[in-house]
Length: 303
Image 1 (cartoon, rainbow, N blue to C red):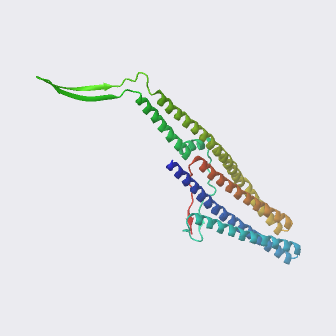
Image 2: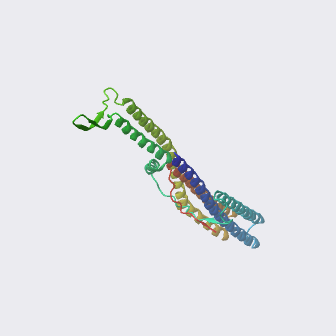
Image 3: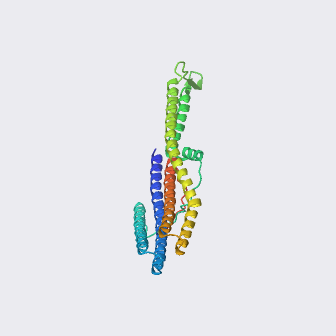
């Protein structure tokens, strides 16, 4: 029981620390995206100002581009604050031993495919509650054997010696109680009843854990597939669309609104991708907690 409780505490702490590390990595990536968006907004502003000076753009366009640039600056500062808060949370979990500024080197794109059957098997083999009940079941089976042994007669050995007038007698005695009516059937039946009760508890626990595993696995697969789609399909297209839109605006072929729309679309895809990655890692942590075994996290903290 004590070992099972200790393992539960260990898993919960591992889950909290892992979640904190992932938050830092996500916020660091979000800050990098914000700074990239900031650079693009400044580039757009520079193009608009050059076209304004050449009489090819309106003052309204220049003001609109400046607002976009200022908003990008504000977003970058907000993500910087989020990152500092995430670092402080992990440092608190670690007892304040981490430096003020550090980076969590996590492979955020490490989202391995896992089957539901494999997750069930891991839970059966490693979940603390399963292990506790399986240990109790083995104990109950030993109790059955002990009760069965109690039904057999006890053998008692003894010795005697005696002297008569002309001889001395020495010998051994063997005593055996024959249980004609009491074969310890009550004890054996009680032991079997305890086995049945433990097996029922194990079945209930299995159903509960499997429900948690199933929900976490479905959420993980949904977010993982979505992240793959954004990274493999939508991100390249949105980046190319932004590149073409910027070139077209510089050439005077499209309006500023078309360029800003392409920029926001690309930024939205990056944000949605990062959100899908965050959801996938959160679901993976839930899955690891539900199975009782954390997957190895490729992470480290560097100044």
